[in-house]
Image (cartoon, rainbow, N blue to C red; front, top):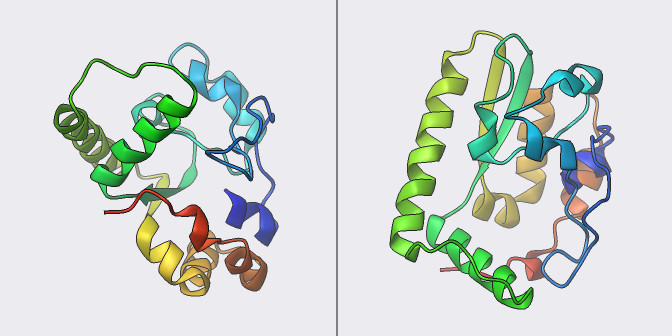
Length: 170
């Protein structure tokens, strides 16, 4: 989302979740996304904007809504490490699942969403590996610009990538 914003894509965000030690540049989220299972009507007013939607909620996006989806994937061990770090820093408890079971559930959700997105005729899908994005931000920015078919500033997109924020690695 930071790359898209820097490149010139308008974002659908509400800044309800403020930057913190886990995400010092912010979350770039919109609270309405959490209610997609109940209400999707607001999505039509956000056409042309980038919206951050987590994989389990992608299935609730109306099938008639045209979309270009950037699916950022990350090693699931890193995902569970990152989530554990975030939950611990917030003195909360997470789901009562082992890391192994959580990774299995996440992998199933990801694959189901991939399949459904590929079946939709009005959806284009570009998968981006998080580690590759960190390693090659300019090449990734160029791929995104080509995929979105928009005139965006690839140099600015690449410049916002800070490898030091990639803290939970395997």
